[in-house]
Image (cartoon, rainbow, N blue to C red; front, side, top):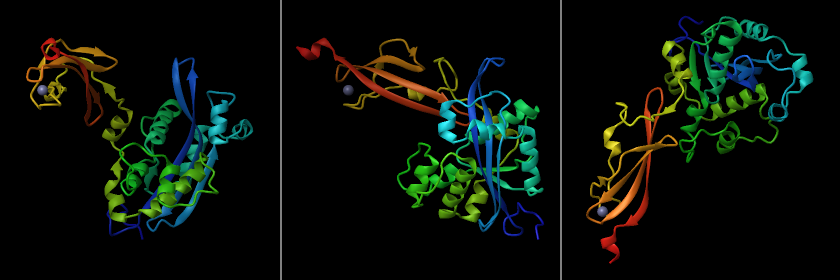
Amino acid sequence: MCVNIFQLGSGCLYYVIMDLEWNNSYNKIKKCFVNEILEIGAVLVDEHLDVIDTFSVIIKSQLIKKLSGRVKNLTHITNEDMGKGISFYRAFADFEKWLAGRDCIFLSWGNSDIRVLVENFDMFCGQRYVPFLSQYVDLQKYCQQFIVNAGTQQIGLMTAAVEMGIDVTNCKFHRALEDSLLGLRCLKKCYNRELLFNTAVMCDKAFYHKLSFKATYITNINNPKIDRSKLKCECAECGEQMKRMSDWKCVNQAFSAIFLCKHCEKLVTYHVKFKEYYDRIDVKSNITEMKKTESDTE
Ligand SMILES: [Zn+2]
């Protein structure tokens, strides 16, 4: 019996592993590229990861008449398929009916599907929040922590599946339902009920804000968010603090300045980039050697 499904240990949990196929096309009215969902695939499982049901539907585009060759190749959705598709509104009404009021933890491979889902609810329904989304886990991030040598770069679903020892020979990639079922197989390889439950984030205001936040480079050297200690440069040879000899320049989103090591009489150009994310600033720097000062060449 489900009393309080989000109190781990007492009731039962449900997960929905969702995958969306979408098209990216230029919109003349909005004067920008927009993403439009063309297919929903989802698998509903219980806390033992036993499949309760699957969901699959193709959505008829409201923005384009014909699919581009790239999308056809990538998704294997044909123009005929799309012609038989249903409207966005009806597709998600059916989807909610399919969920039957279950409060589920949603999972998707990387957060781009969720971002497009949110964009589309806003664009087609004028709703800023997705009504059925209450808790979310980025399945890619969750699985990646179990893959040795996976690094920090986002890895694709197929790569992860292969790394986890899943036989993918008969999988049709980039069809929504097939991809969500493959996501489930990956999850089964590293399922830990407590860990997954604790990884889930509430889909609250902060969640939506974070999702729509676009990472940008800081291009003003006086920006107070810049960690000033990252504007210092140490000599690679002697470890001494180098002296800045020029003003900071900002080219291609990177700051650069010339530095001198008085001890080694060496001039270098120090490059540093600050990329601002919702909750952090990533710093990347490198040094390029210029030339030795005259006294050294004597
Ligand atoms: Zn030095």
